[in-house]
Image 1 (tube, helix red, strand yellow):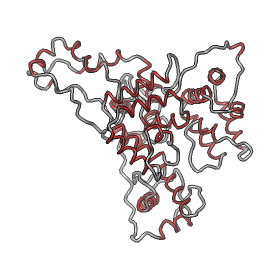
Image 2 (spheres, rainbow, N blue to C red):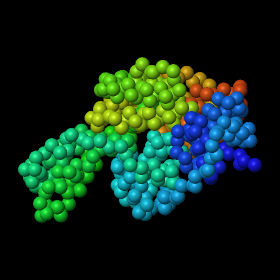
Image 3 (cartoon, rainbow, N blue to C red):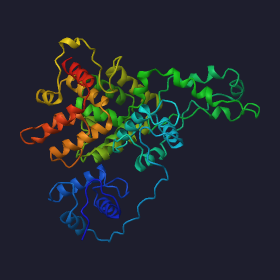
Length: 448
């Protein structure tokens, strides 16, 4: 008898399932024997297309249907070997943590010290990296996160690097600090998909006497202090993150940043992306613009859409990506706290006159206003990821959903207490997990 599989299952049976789904065109992810979100979405699509109960559980009926038209027997591949690296949790220390910090920094997600201490900054960087790469956002470094971190990034040659002549290179070691910051100043930390090339090439022709000079510190030292705290948040923005935010808020200032990005794309790159997006979104016609494409970002097609967005980001020149991030930051981030995707609202009402709101009250009057969207996104950024994951699992169970929700905006959009009375219970659980300070800030943002 076939094993009953559901999200969280692992092993050779899951590998066979993924191979069958891939043959039938429902799955494009990695054959890794891990029944994650991508496999769950593929199962849901297959069940819906074949008139089966759409529950994301692979039982006898789904097994029979998925094997019915397969002409060749499937021999499950063995489980992939472990990476030989430990699972890291907040609070851990050591060389493995330092390695994770180095990989995160190289991909533009971490700007702190490489100290081997798994603190809050490292945890937040891991969570941002997991969210941008379609992984479970749990803030820990397990096998899948290690594998993504160590995956080679897409690179391209930067025309500025070989520009200095050999005679200029000989002069570089003496006034090193004045030369190095010149290319580094306009360059913000790049994302996982477009890492900034290290300016090491000009040092190669230097005479042996110059080689022992510690050139690495002058390259690293000017970069860290020259980037203020706000741009560090901007550096982690990927097109995946931007699409996720824009599909829910569609704020006019976000639209302006997206349109500016399209204006900097070549017609060939834009056309190729829109074709990839059409396939990823199961659309009959091409989206007319980048704005229309990103507004159609959705949970059910998120995996394939992420691949299209990652491809587009890999095609951007550094200055184009930097300009988009700057536009997005200038248009949507005010001075103060807030996520890279929402404008911070000034606190105008004193605490004594503040009407304190909890989530169970706020969801009943949700109207998708700018202040409400801002309040929900800022609250999600303030709540620890483990708490959010527990809540999203409770919410999905209460809502009888096969896939796990990924944002508070989704939750408020899908609220229907008459059809799903248990949704209120899930919201009450999250209310109890929030601190008084978080509720006060949420209430200020909501009523701004």
